[in-house]
Amino acid sequence: MATRWIEINNLQKSEIQNLPGVRIKKLPIHFDSRGSLHELWRQDEIPAGFNPMMACASWSQPGIQRGPHEHVEQDDYFIFSGPSDFLVALWDARPGTNRPGQGWTLQVGESNPVQLHVPHGVVHGYRNIGQAPGLVVTVTSSLFQGPGRINPVDEIRHENDPNSPYQFPSP
Image (tube, rainbow, N blue to C red; front, side, top):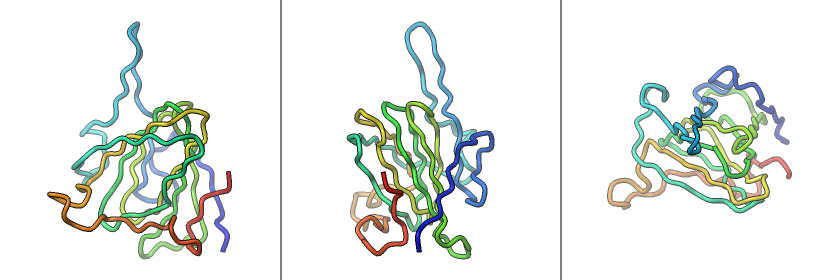
């Protein structure tokens, strides 16, 4: 079944309609004569129950896609602020959801800086659609491979399955 895509443009509400728990918010950026300060996250503004355990940053070259994948227990909190722009794709794979074949897309990054909370069970991925290498900061609710890096990685990697129903929109 081909995915029906819903493009998310309205950032007036923090929760995406029909995708409970996924929250998006304009990134607070403060400018002065020296440059800018980006508020990546604040404890008083993150979703209740989200307890950050680690943070990492990744750079993606133009055209590079990461995911789609999902986590069994881990929640992700992404910061897309540039450089470059990204297309984010989301699908709700949580038990009890009734939206087969529906996906959501967001265009975020330098032209639309945001904070994005993705709870476990929501399939997600992103592609650098800009002309420059792009930075994504990720704050997670779990340690990668657990304490001491001895546990399996909490990921279901759909991008490795050509028959997966979770396929990114064509560029």
